[in-house]
Image (cartoon, rainbow, N blue to C red):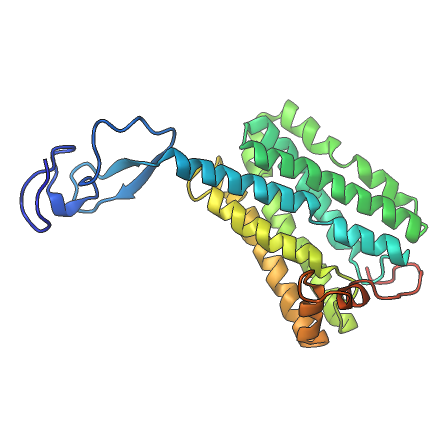
Length: 283
């Protein structure tokens, strides 16, 4: 049963006035959706109705989630390679990485314990691995063995999450908070040095792609926690804030030269500056 827009006829699907909701194209013959999408209808006596999402849309959302996972898995590989090639971590904030390791550890453990979407669990595990690699680089290039001890940080959220599961909603806030606050030391360091040469912009490109794909995924798949979605928003903030500093201090050439299909060979000179191997005085 259908009715013309603006008429007072009732919809044959939910028995509500036609003009007050989105049920017109929906049929009872549609298969039951795996996940409902809710539209709030102020004129509806039901308060809200569930509109099925097509399987193809859900599959696209899941694909976007895996793309985000791949981007975040490879996210810090350019930065690690940059550190390795110059045998230095100068211009790369050790304080920021340490804070990120704390947040990544809680994200990975809590995501697994809560049964979050698989892409998020994979992202968390690889995020921890990447920051552990940075700790090893700090230990070798700065010749400070104390950074080896920080590699055991992931054991703390594991013990807390298993022994005190009621604290998970609270500790879940640590990832977005740490992701945001950990970026501030890097921004300050780049501002202090008046350059972003110690930071790989290729890492930030992956940050942008992963952030947008993650937000697209959670536009159709309900997240277990809002803090999970905030992680992807923070990824975009990190990338665009460093883009702004790169343009301000190093010019647009810094951005263009970091793009693999645009910068060509120029990207290697900008992304891999020849900095001396010294103990990091930045933090």
